[in-house]
Image (tube, rainbow, N blue to C red):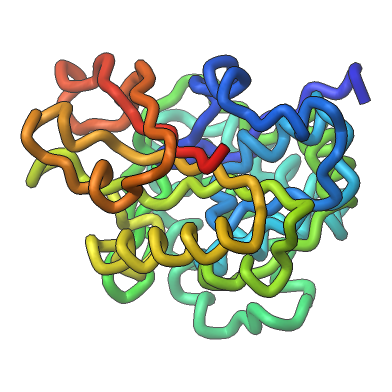
Length: 304
């Protein structure tokens, strides 16, 4: 296990790869001592924290949830049908790399159109051959679209424009194999974050990484699914946090810090009053204006 170096297979808004070394100091001691029976992530996203923990610590079992059905479909394909997925990505890689930039752009939009048109024909609850191709399309689009975003409109259509990358890594088979290996110990399910309460016990560690609260009116990026995660959802999440705390589980949550823009904004300070609230340095990586990608503070909230 110490030789495995799995990393997220998708670039995901709010991904935690850059913060992993800092998170280390905030993990509960029981994790480092191998005492937890179950690790849970109600907002799986790109999976950076799970992959890190699963490789560094003794992890018996994990539950990964996310409301995004396309993401969960892809996780399950990597977990269960990796060889066929690699074949599909290899075909995309070979075809794409042979094209000039204009033809690449045409090909990208052809794949995106097919991806959007076929979404109504996919049964997201029952695995089928369509799953593997769809997972391949999602990874291809993620690697070749603008800024590596996953974004959908209100109809659930993937709408990120073409990205002009000279040599995108469409197929990273070695990493996919490592990811697949780690996912063997995980239960993966499309579900609302509240699903975790059906599994949590006193011998569990839960890491929450919800869609971040926008720190300004122009900073919102919550469209990784068609579901809106507004202040009401943040409040519902805080209520669940307190419920799981009463069960004795160890809890860690990250979010944006509104005080980056307004020092008087104590939304999270009040919402998680009584818990440990830490402010850590992070880097804002996704913004349409490169000048606004810079260092900011993010919150880590723990009950231990």
